Length: 393
Image (cartoon, rainbow, N blue to C red; front, side, top):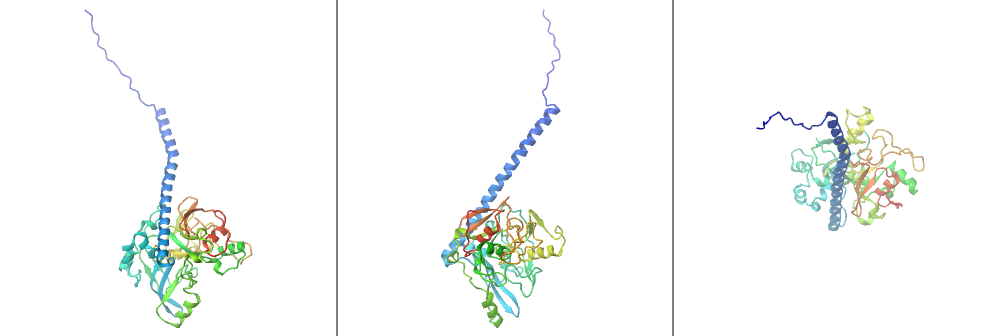
């Protein structure tokens, strides 16, 4: 009889050695390193496309407004009372508010009381201007909350970029953000660069932008109810002149003139990818003056009448430093940055798209422009009747 022998059978278990495990981890890390930039680029491309669609919607709204009223909306409209050498704003509106009915926001537009200011705390208008609208927000911009700001009676760097400093300080509550603004004018030294190229002289209509509407402390359109003599003098001499932007005035061609541009993340101050504050600045009085002005007058809300500006250029290192020019025909001292160096009002425009910025042209098309565009071409694209020769851009 055969005997059965039972023994302990052992099974070899397969497992990763330490070296093999490290190799696998290294391969995964390499794959992640290769794929992550592609994923980030795909996400930015999607955000950039949405930003482009926002500008297209604004363009459609602008032209629908023009079809209804025979002109494009004014950049801003202020009703003020003149008193001696100062003014006191009674109410004001912005282009961003004016075109609301043409962007499926008629209910929001109709909810405004347009004979009372939006800066009265707790008022209906103050609550409405804090409405966040996706069409005015570029998704590439880091989100932030606006804590509110003030319109001061004076600014440390001269006249307000848009509007006019009020007789008494006005407190502005939180505003719904706008990463887009309209351009009204080209000023020196940027204008002198253009003038040197075109052989024009400064302070002529050749510097006027699409939404230019007068020189009353930088292109604010003003109406007055006081009937005072000084009101009539100021209003007539440098107030609401040329205040109806229309197609006929864009003699350079709609496709060669900026209508709306990106200028993101205001009223915060951004410089070369950094959000600057008093604690992160260089500590100089010059920096403090620029930052103070940005926190007060940058016009970062879609309902803010300061959401418009001339541009005069900035130095490449940011907002601190000279950007001057001694006159047409002389050597240029302002050879700095205009696009994506900083978002300081009246100096430069700024986007969060790597290497470029998107603009709405006067014909309703959206163009991507390289941040290294030369200054004369950029200035020529701002002006609406400069008789400029513009090649491919």
